[in-house]
Image (cartoon, rainbow, N blue to C red; front, side, top):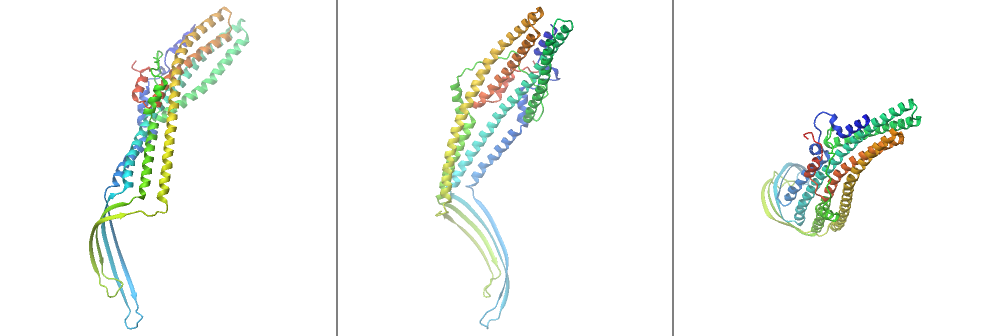
Length: 447
């Protein structure tokens, strides 16, 4: 009876009550991850860098102004072959400075590239939002991985205590001659096996905590557990409804659609290489020279200003423009294929998440009943052992079945909560309020 009370107390209290302070909730872990996750920080930096593409695109149709200057010294030594003109030497300097401003009037490539900049920024925004959704899923999975490992340790500890009690009882009955050594050896073997499993479970627990640390930058000390009376809600929509939502909202599909749009614009930009360009050009210059190689030339100081239009018509570029156009068409086809891949992958992930969630709901309900049945079986087996119709092995087996049912039920509850996030992530709808809903299913410090 004392062993039964001990088991009841261990399973009635969450493992986190043995630590001081309030436990961290799923939202707490997620908020830490928002501030410290390196993957999200990398995505944010990439997104900010992509915003600069807009300015670079605008710059393509803004004027450019360049200043150039040069200075040089020339020395010459001349000898005439007619014999009558004496040889001579000279030394003189040249100085030039000019400012040129160029305003594109028509450059088809630049116009297309400006549109490409907008598409690239849109794509970068979606990639950042996808990273945020991925962080929600990673935080949830890491959080419940710790709880699973933690509960496994607690269950093994309680199971070890129960087996130890059975071992002590077997030894006592063997000493008085009412039991065989087989009962003692069976209980001892079960006890040694639990000790070995406890070592492996502790390693899993430490690894799970390090997974949270990789996201948040801190090792969790105590996490809020799931309520024993968790409310499992049935799915209101069928699988086809979720598939349609995923096609409309999944960010992987939208990213590939932007990639296709970018590829189509690249085809247009490549074909624009065959078109003429027109620029307005203004230049102001000053050239000064105090001589020239000719002995008859004096120095000069020339100031000039020009304004006009510059037309350039490409005639032949070695086939490079045509090659780039063909390459762009092939990349466009690849982008179309990538959309098909994203659609099929999203459809598969949505179906998998839906079925897993549906299974989790059924498992929670079935395992709730299995736990009640396993507890009843253990009570009956213990009673049978006391009156001599059951053996100690029967009691150990019944205890093992009870603890397995408790473990499976806890894992089914965690899988249910994680699969909610997985289905929302596959459909592109996952957000922080979904974590707030799950937080309501946790035993928080204020409760």
